[in-house]
Image 1 (cartoon, helix red, strand yellow):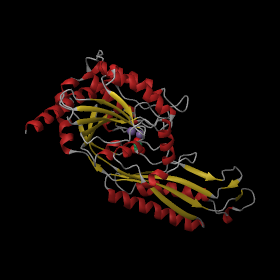
Image 2 (image 1 turned 90 degrees about the horizontal axis):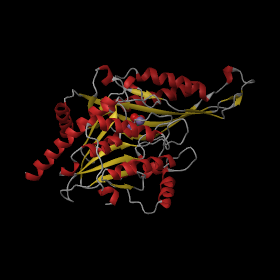
Image 3 (image 1 turned 30 degrees about the horizontal axis):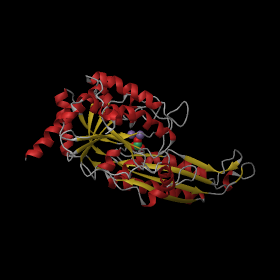
Image 4 (image 1 turned 180 degrees about the vertical axis):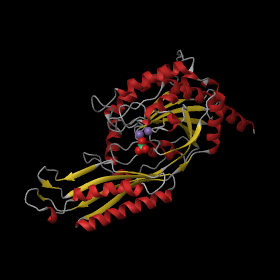
Length: 427
Ligand code: GLV
Ligand code: MN
Ligand code: MN
């Protein structure tokens, strides 16, 4: 451990002080961006290096050994003072963002891990704490999400490596370039000592606010799939082709997009989104010959999600046929719905009760790194109220008092976790 890591520092003595510090840190990290005036941080970008440079001294001052792995994930390990063989609790979330993002999606969960190490009786716990900042959860750069957490569990392979960014660089090429610049880095890996993963996240929706609650305990996450869809028509002169004789790919896509909305409303609790659209050749006086769209479909029941996606793609086919277009789709991402670990969920319930907060059980419609970790290690999540439910937006916010509540709950959770580790050791 470095000398910085062994140095004792003043620690925030209360959850409120720790919350104020966390809010300040989130503002500092928001300045690390690829686009001045907006927050944008993508996988393996220079802005991500900046975030790592900002986080490192905070983590080292808290006694952590800081490393970055070959997939660009940031790790801060607070080793157990009791035993080298002690189990490890992983706490974190992601450090990448959507375009024009807010300051808390992902970042909050990483800073929560740091705050819990700083504010707790960490030296006395019979377990190590590893704070993790995943390098990609949003999929902003390559379309496919969870690249950081997938690398940690050995799932960053196969077709995923061939996804391209907007410059035509593949995931594989980006990883090779990153490693060539940093040959000293270790391969990403989930330590076999990891006993649990805990992620704090803003809710990204309005439920907690509508119930006047600070915190929610997540018990399940909706499954999700993403496709690229393409309508092919015939490009041509905007002035000379009568409306009846056109095969306009973008007009076909537009008709389909409104049907995506109509069809999804027939499936309870389902959501489907066309978030990207591009037309070619994209001239003001040219009929679009090609329209490409993204499609994101989510539901907590994987069979319902599959049925909805089928209905949406069948409709695209029907619209294309009616308009003399051709249609094709490629599914490049699929993540099954996930139930979180019942034992950890119950521990969070108890921690919330001890801290004096009523926390409801919730299902997440958003994707989170916990869904990638859950098949490999018991995982759990806590949601914080998100004013206005505004997220993936620069106005995204969280109240300092709710952050203090989360830290208070987190410290009670660490005590619960310590008691369970001790019980297992004495069993
Ligand atoms: C990530 O925030 C997602 O749910 O798409
Ligand atoms: Mn997130
Ligand atoms: Mn997000």
